[in-house]
Length: 323
Image (cartoon, rainbow, N blue to C red; front, side, top):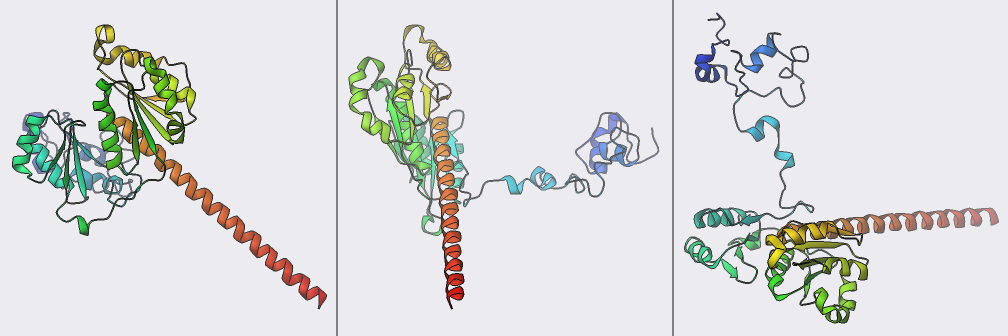
């Protein structure tokens, strides 16, 4: 046994962890902090736990991981314009956990949402959160905050989003996209039953399709619709393959592989039935477009101000010369 109190043998690892006060313990009989400080371990020349070591000087084992590594600045806030609102994923959670998570979110935002909720789960969640609202087609839950008037009002995004669905079987995912996009601050409108086999219906909605700034296409089977849409509009297209096919669709795997092999450029792809991912991607596109528009407007305003100032200086100099 070593004489130093920090250098305990392996069989006393738990006691050493308590005595040393660090969670960075190495099985080589010493904690990492003590090995580095005494110059007997890897990295001793840099002394990563010493003073001025870029955030590791306070690594003492006390407090949470976020306090030790100072992760607070990375956490999104209610006023963060580029943060994606959190959505509770219901599968795998008990009704009590869903209700608690929704109520926790309503403490800092006006509305909280949960996705992929079946009717039985909704009935159980309602016992814990009586004010919850259920959208059966989108399979989403919405809970409004009791202190909504005291919370910041979310900003609506400029631009619009078209949610195109190929068939009635795809409308469940399409409705999920529309509801969650609205929750994230975007305006989304549906274009239904315009599959590749119903091409005339798609062409009859061509004006609405081209008016959208982002297009989300929800389709299954051979997933030909995203390629058709991308060839008809200049807007970015987000494809969502669905598991609603039959036969060799393999639960959506065949549409996913077909979409990956799409020949038309300008298509991004989400996972099978990933309506939330598609909505979040489209919302980010709209946010970046709004940001670029604001930067361009500010640059044009600054340029106009410079031109006005130059004109004023030229006019003043001309008057002084004439006088």
